[in-house]
Amino acid sequence: MRRARTSPTGWRSPPARRAVLGLLPVHLCPGPRPAHERDALARHATVLLDGLAEAEGEARDGLIGLLETVADRPAVGERVVRAVRALPARRPGRRSVLPLLRAAGAVLVRADLDRALTATALDPDPKRAGTALLRETFGVAGPAVPSEWRRELAAATGDVRALAAHRSRGTTPGSRELLAALADVHADAPPDVRAALVDWMTDLQPLGAPPWTLAEDARAGAAAPRAVHPADLDQPRSAAQRERLLALLASGTPRQRNTAAHALLSWPEPEARAAALDAYLRGRTDAPADRARLTALGRALTEADPVRLLDEAGGVRPDRVARIAATSLDARQLQALLPVLLRLWLHGPESARADACGALRQAPADALAGHLEHRLAAGESGLLELVAGRALQRTPLLDRLAERHPGARLVLVDGPLPGPDAAERRTAALRALRERAPVPVPAGSSASSDEEPAALLRSPEPARIRRALARLTEGSLVLDPARLEELVRELLTHPETGVRLHAHRTSRVLLDRETHLRLTERLLGDARPDVVRTAIRVLSQARWTPALPAFVALLGHGRATVRRAAEEAVLRAGPDAVPLLRRAVSRARPDRRAGYERLLERIREAESR
Image (cartoon, rainbow, N blue to C red; front, side, top):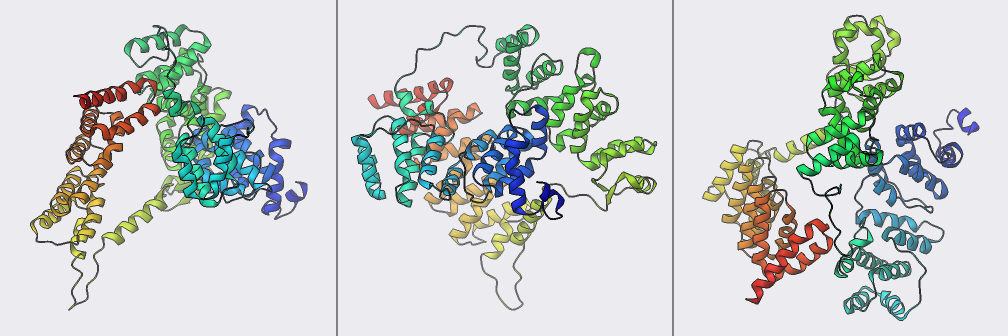
């Protein structure tokens, strides 16, 4: 480390970075890590992620451990997910990146597991590493016990057809033993058979799902129902439950107060979040550990009255106000709290100033400079510390201050500053312009017959799009059916509801029945409940069986009208919907299973008549 630090290029060379980052977990940041060390790791998460892209073996394990301690923070989680999913293949250690993705709030997908399996090929013992990864991912443990069915499974892994035939016979033990056996035979199978083995494992237990969600556990029969008591805190939301939770916030034990506050933070009503925030700011509860509830607490902070947040005489702790603002809010949300944070930084207690300063430095620089303008004009030059070194849009006042205080490190630029998503928006705008621009036609030549209708249907004006659709229906415009299907598919996601419905009606008139019904399926995900209900009825009356999985999924829609339409569609499908409903029962939460079971019973009754 001393040689790397004294060399001008030492820190920039990959070997030096790997050497230094490999020392962090054990020698520089050994566990257990206090709060200030975790805060430092969170601030430098980008450095750790850069190191993870180069680290291998034990050094990689140590960096994964450091990142897992801070991955659940709102400001770190999204960066961790993006960076981990973009990592190049490196020799793994004993730890997988999949628990890190879960800690960062990501929903594991098949691509994550495939990347991790690909990386095990770089291990000195790839078979052992691949088997250990699958056992850890699916939560299976214990030594392999030789048996006849295991030998039959190993013999069937020679090719995909033999494996499919073996699987179809269904002569297998419980799912936990089967998952362990599939993990053990994975390493010795050919590449195409390995993919089929992983497919089988994810069918038995989806990625990220705990073992108790397996269908066989549901078939084994649930335990005796728990006796419900009025004082239970895990009951469904109701006015009575809300009153119980609020009473516990005021007078319960510390553990009960924390449980009540965490429950209220998961409620959608602002009043519930406000009550949990009030208890936290007055020191009656602790900050939640999981990111979703911490985000809800920060949202409640932005909804609160600024005067109440500064009410120290009423018991509000300024350090907690500043800490939640600094750890759970993004730059856009911090704008609403600029007066509160500035007051805490200037006049608050010592315990609140560091977090208040950090939050102010995270706020948009131009918004902060605009809020400070009248104070800076009055001569409070000490406030320039908050915007030092940050790019600011040039104004006459800032020009004068930069000349008067050259040591303030003001960075002034001309024109409005682009936001963090400016590059993406510019690319999308240029792509839209290229797609919508009419093709130039030389004089004396004829344009393709599809170009004019396509340009009209991609117009930015909804009225022009609808006129073009009407002309297509009347026959004054003509489009190739394949091109029309492509354009209608785009219009079914248009922001204007009238355009989406008009495009759907046009497909019914001009396209064949199968294509029209396939396009209608896209409306099942529409933002308007009445549009979704119409699509359900069209597909149900047409007996369009590919839409059955979507009908079952819509049984959990947030609008009652959509749920009723989905129920009618499922009942109309009859026996075809039974396998999907049974799968939904096995995967549903206990409080939602009754609805699926009721539909199964009604289908059985209809069949018996």
